Amino acid sequence: MTLATFLKVNPPMFKGTTNPTEVDTWFRAMEQALQAQLVPEEQCVEFATYLLTGEALHWWQGAQRLLQQGGDPITWDAFQVEFYKKYFSNSARTAKELELLQLKQGAMSVSEYIDKFEELFRFFHMCQGALGDFEEWKCIKYEGGLRSDILSLVGPMEIRTFSELVNKSIIAEECVKKVTVEKGSHRERMHTTLSPRTE
Image 1 (tube, rainbow, N blue to C red):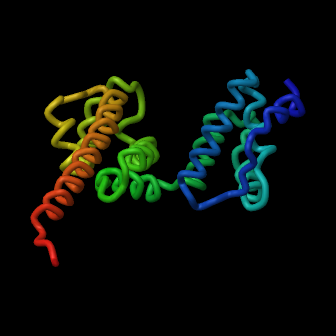
Image 2: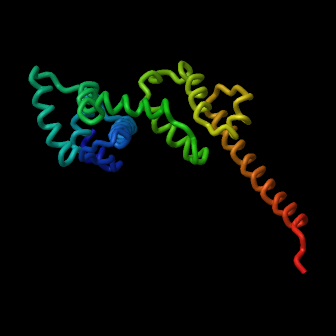
Image 3: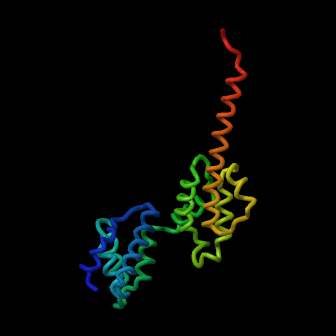
């Protein structure tokens, strides 16, 4: 595998950021590109670090010197540890976890709530590993943040498959909207028939 071949898939560059979501998104995109191109393990670090620019490149030059002191090649796992240590500190991860624990739908649509929930959930330390191990917890946490009008429709179903729960909450939101519109037009008709005519 050559670097030129790998670069044909247009893997993203990384210049450094303090936004944990951007950090994690870049790293995951890089892993996906490396796997898709079947890049051998021993070339992964070389190819990924070629895409570092600006501040991230300066950081890597220093980190690389420290990691290579033993003379052994730098493994992908070692790179990942250093990368996350630098760009996604434990305090940033803890902040994301707390944000998830406190997340409420509020004025967001169900779709917006799902996007925010999924973004934060991927950082939740307790829920790393096989999906089956934490799917029930994920469903309970997701339900706990739903607005009461939607929760009252999906909660009694006790759905513990996340994709099904998401689908049902989208349907519930549509039902709530429909009821609200019908109530509004019913009120309008009542108001029109009850209001006295002015001659």
